[in-house]
View 1 (spheres, one colour):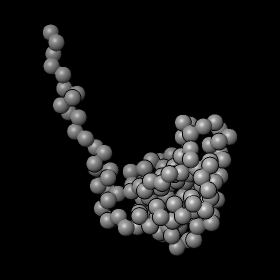
View 2 (tube, rainbow, N blue to C red):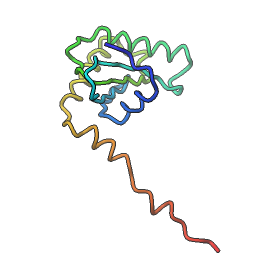
View 3 (tube, rainbow, N blue to C red):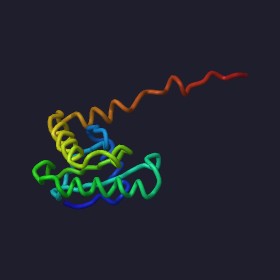
Length: 134
């Protein structure tokens, strides 16, 4: 298992399928190349100070280390987006949440990742066109 480190990889995974949990969001995207599973971790600033964000990130990394390898699909990228409850949530509960989230992602139809990305794009042409005020 490798780590995602490039911003472009994180942005690509953000357009894929996602599953929510109380302590994190799991995002997944299939890659075309034949590489290993890659995992990235991110926590936004609204989740606390740098110390708290680092602690959330460490807990998420430990979750993935303790997860059985079979749960993650080969040739896929995963991103775990940490939320503030990850600081206080019981670790075994978080591990069960991660397994459940990965299982929900596996049940999604193959086109769900693309359909979700398409549903985010909304035609805003009518709002942008303003009549001349002369």
